[in-house]
Structures are given as C-alpha cells and as structure tokens.
Image 1 (cartoon, rainbow, N blue to C red):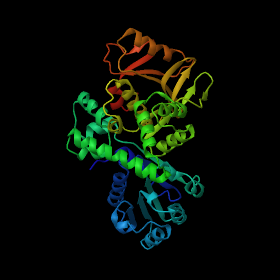
Image 2 (cartoon, helix red, strand yellow):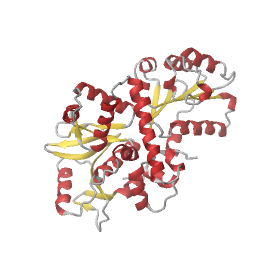
Image 3 (tube, rainbow, N blue to C red):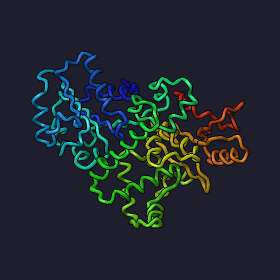
Image 4 (cartoon, rainbow, N blue to C red):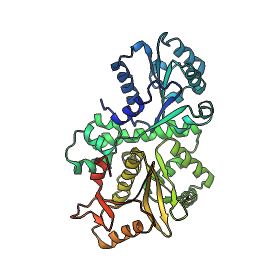
Length: 400
C-alpha cells in the first residue's frame, strides 16, 4: 500500500478538533480514498476501537441506497459510539443529496470528529460554505510528487525515472499496473473520461461535451502559455465550432473546480497587484496531458514548468506569474514571510538563452532570492547572486 506520509501527517494533526470538518479534496484518482483508509488504520493503531469509527465510501455498491440526507443521517446516528469520540469518515460525499446539512448537524455534537472527501471544488461552496463558514479545513491532495514516484516505483535511476514521470505522470493507481504503455494509456484515458463525465458534464448539465473536450485539449496543448476565454473562443470558432466567450469562461471555471487544471494568475511586480487577464493554466498531472493530446514532443520546457509549479504548490507556496514592464518571471512563490523569483528552462548553456532568463530575474528592485531551475549540471551555480539549480536536485530536496 502507498502511504502518503505527508498528507497523513497533515490530517492527523487535526485529530479531535471536533468543531472543524476536515475536507480532503483533489482530482479523481489522486489518492483521497486511500488516504481515508490509511487514516482509518492509523486510528485503530492508536487504540481507537473499530466500533468508534464509521467509514463510508459512497462509491461502494454497499451504500448505493444511501443517496438522500435523511438516509445518511439515520445510517450514521444508528452507529454513533455511546462513549468517547466517534470518528466519521465519508468518502466521495458529494454523491449524497443535501449531505451538507447532515455533516453540519453531526458537527454540532462535540463527540464527533468528521472527515470527508470529494472530487469537486463545489464541495466547499453554496450550502456547505454557508453552514460551515470558518468551521472546516481543506487539505488539497495532488498526484505523486517526483520523490514519491521514485519511492513507490522502486526506481534508483533518477534520470530515467524522470523521463517516465514526465510521460506517465504520478497518479498512484499506476504503481500497481503492468508497465506497458497501452495499459497505462487506457487507464489514464479512463480517468480523463470519468472527470469529464462525472465531475463536470453531469454536475454542470453540459450537453455539448465535444466543446468541453476541445477546451480541455486547448489548455493541455498550451500549458504555461497566457490564456484568455476570448482567445479560446476565437480559436474554436476558427475550427468551425462557434462558442461564446461566456461559455468558455464557464468551462474554465468547471475545469478548475474538478481540479484537473490550476490557474496561475499574473502579478504586476512594479504595481504590486494581480492582473485580471492573461493567466496561465497548468494540468494537475502530465500523464493526463499525454492521454489527452498524445506525446507533445517538442515542448519539454513547458512540461518542466508544469512539474515545478505543482512542486511549489505541494510545498505550501502560493504561486503567481510575475510581470515587470515587458518581461516575465515564470513564478513568484510566496509562503509566509518568504518570497522567491523562479525561472524554469530546459537549458541555459546557450548564452543568448541564459542572458534572457537572467535579465528577467535582475529587473525587480528588491532583495528577494532568485533561482534558475534547469536540466544543466554546471561547474558553477551562481550568476551575480542568482542561483542555478538542477531541476532534479530541486525536486528531491526538502529545502531550496
């Protein structure tokens, strides 16, 4: 079994905070159900009797009849422990209609410690947000990091491991599959179809799924590029599929809510403000990208940028794209009192490329650390205070 140590440690820190509902969110097949199982086992290992743990996975056929709030409430209240805390673990809770009222009612009983998972960001909107305002904590799960990928696949050669990671991504379910490209691709395409159908189309009652697929394909082909709903609408119209800007904008929101794409907003460093347009999008897993558009071939740099973006997110940074006059910094990473400027490039061995990357990092008139991440192994790693680091060293390190 794959133990996601980082997430398990994070969620167990909130144990017995009865007034807080612990929400584990993230894209499908990122490991949320497995984390719930590991939390269940961890509780038992710490001496919690099984009778004090209620664990329901609503994708399990056993609970197919529990789809209404009243049925859920009756089922859980009949199993509550008479003594001490009852730990309530509800997996893929969004499959139950009006579940929010049940969870809030159970939370009011101070002896209940509640954990829920879901595959859509709307889990935390509407009724849920109203009922639980300030009374929940969200733990966002991502697919395997590169270091986890090496560990769980028992890979010692980091170079070949990275090539495989870029190609097939880090969904935990791949670890147990035969390492044959057609099997892996069928699995990934199945995940994509489930996200599109269950988490987006059915939820939002989308009728023209073809347009949604085209928007997804456009974003997957343009990771790390400035994107607007207008640009996508014009592109689709040019291909013979006329669509409104409002529709595209709605689809972009739905894709974010399903956690398949993450938006990196642009930040004007000089004006110290977030820009309203031309944001960038990154796909949560490069294996899903491969399933969507095939092997992109010539945009290795974009794939590297995608990997770095999510590694920064895993480490708790808020990530934006920096703009300074007419120049761009790939990432501004901010965490607590720490801010970093980061450029990502396949190689800076070419002098013209190196100077272009360095020029952007030199522009901001402040003292924040600056870092270039590339695939180069250089005899020196400092360019007048700007540090260069091999991307694999960065991904496998705990500190920058």
